Image 1 (tube, rainbow, N blue to C red):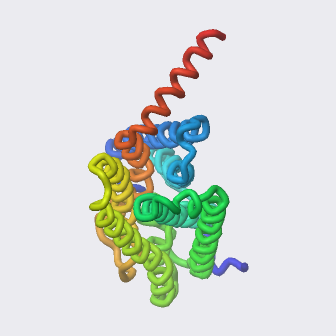
Image 2: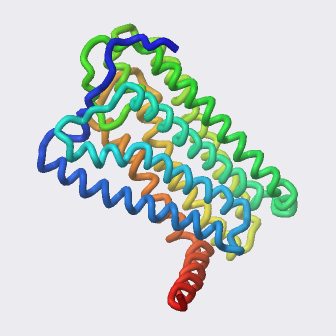
Amino acid sequence: MQQNHSITEFILLGLTQDPMRQKMVFVIFFVFYVGTVVGNLLIIVTIKSSQTLGSPMYFFLFYLSLVDFCFSTSIAPRLIVDSLSARKLISYNECMTQVFALHLFGCMEVFVLILMALDRYVAICKPLRYPTIMRWQVCTILIVLAWMGSFIHAIAQIILALRLPFCGPNLIDHYCCDLQPLLKLACMDTYVINLLLVSNSGAICLSSLVILMISYIVILHSLRNHSAEGRKKALSTCTSHIIVVILSLGPCIFIYTRPPTTFPMDKMVTVFYTIGTPFLNPLIYTLRNAEVKNAMRKLWRIKIPTESKR
């Protein structure tokens, strides 16, 4: 596609222009990113190494941690490096790549959350048919379809971004490239493109939240017929899922389901779902899940004696 612009690079304004606050941004988000990488990789290694975490729920949790790791890695390193840079330059091609990665992994996270809700629905509402419905082949097909859907969504977003002509200022009032801040720089009427953005990203976020909330309401309603111990275990798992759903989809709905206007809180809302949520997800799923914590303890007991013998 021929580039319809005269700008070859953009300048990211970042979260703040104050030198002292930029150093604080570096320290805070460096800690957040290291925690995100360690937490999600720990879950990935634990699920792959443990024989007790072979159920579909942990199969999907594996992909949620993988996506969170990739999602944060597509945003956080540049934010950390830029916080110490005088001029935060990003080339046009790098900017478009970041738009693609942001929507690919962001959309995949939403789809994985839906698959996790589906898994809990079948496990709680149709326990006798659970092994048949959620067998390995079905879970694999669902994940492949989720990747395909995310890829199609990201392609649609990058096509919209590539159609934007840039011929004026190249200052992006943000810390990353996304369609909303890029629309402000385009030298054209962006009403139709913003409408397409809302009908794509906004519709995915809003419809996913509705589907997930309905599914968890049905699940919680069906718990009346379970034993007290079964209700406690199911409530613990579903509560973790609901917290992650709200943390992930709430900010997305705020950003992508509105006219092309900007608010002072936009950057912090974006920080929350691009960096905060990938950091919090491992904590939520490990602190509230006894099986994951026990598997991690066993993994460390195996690794430590093995290394000491060497």
